[in-house]
Image (cartoon, rainbow over all chains, first blue to last red; front, side, top):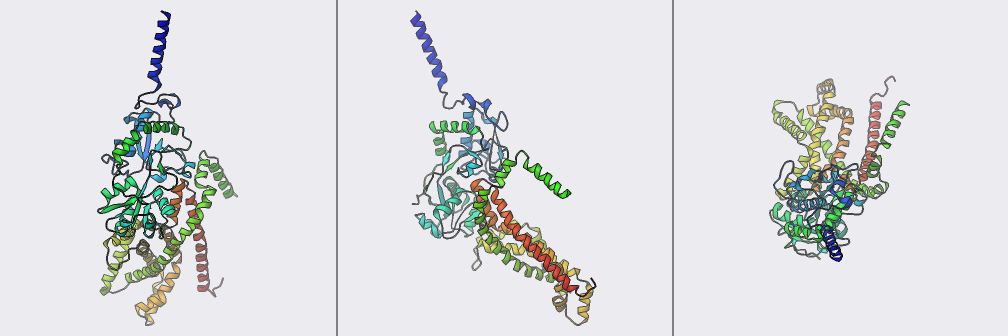
Length: 288
Length: 254
């Protein structure tokens, strides 16, 4: 009798332990300092997120809703929006508990207290930047690509060295521009624009031969923004792998919890699934 | 003494404010400054080229417009009207829009023989816009020359054009040197707008550095370069005006 009782207690203990040991993949993290109530937030009870306006596909989606032009971050559609809501769910926030504000990229690293918990706008991690803000782990590994108008000589280029004789353009403050300067090293200095829209105007005006952007944006540019554009090719990774991370106030302890959420999302295939859904990458030749 | 105390108080308040360390690191980082300064300085030569070339054309073109506006006689009404329309139009349209429309629009037309370079159209836009403002400065100068001067010139048998050229305009221009310098200094800052067309000049280079490190110190570096340019020019102009005054009033009882 006592052994049966003992056995029953042990089994029930084991069952309880097993049931509480690991939550279901979509269950919220409830342990210790990453419990929802213990998170270091700008406004208690909600996750305050921010991105730039306009927020372009394929990173953001949904019908444009004032004050957002082009898309609506709150829709959950588009790769970054979907990842944001997946992370929010891991942290214990429902969709309604996530609030969005528009913050221009240049303001996102302003000194002083940030008005958001984290910022997502295809911001690449770099050591210099990490001295002034905190970055999350990667949620996307970036490849750059070259876009041009169809039928122009640059479209026949097959190597990085072959790009050197052309006038290239990129958006200011992007790693695309850094890639041009450091790796392509063209003979004419690169042109730098406030936005990719201006770069496209310059491309159509014949002032530049090609634009360097990250690969998913390249697909969007060719599909939607250029009348007759094509992707010259996908540029090779050189040196440290470029990655997008969420931007936090320097030293914010929330980063740890977001990283845990991201690790879980990578491990259970959510991120890969979202990349397949929003960032389908077929049809770009590789440049050597 | 009281100014010194006032400044000291403000400095004390700033340095002891809650966010000072943050701001100091963001705006006054020494290493960042040393890294960014040479790059910004070399990009600054683009600004210098732009405003030197533009200023020459502006001074000439604006004088032409001011003169056209004052041509007397009903037969010249279309000329005067054209000058008025030009000045109204280019003072009305924001400079940024002129740069966008001319810088991206005209090259996209792909007209044969028309240059498409962003630097060219940036300079053209600045010349068109600033000539409108500077022509009004010249007009004020011309109007400020006492009418007896023009009357005396006419009574000596000079034509209207000769009176302008030899009597009125030399006096007018001397009087408006301070506002002309004002507009020149404004032009130096507005050369940054050419960056919209893709040209990498000092402001754009500092923006690139700022975005690369998430630190605002390169903006301070750019500000210092511009002030270092403006101050000697302002003092030189003061000296020019003082010398001119001395010459005009030579021989008067002190």
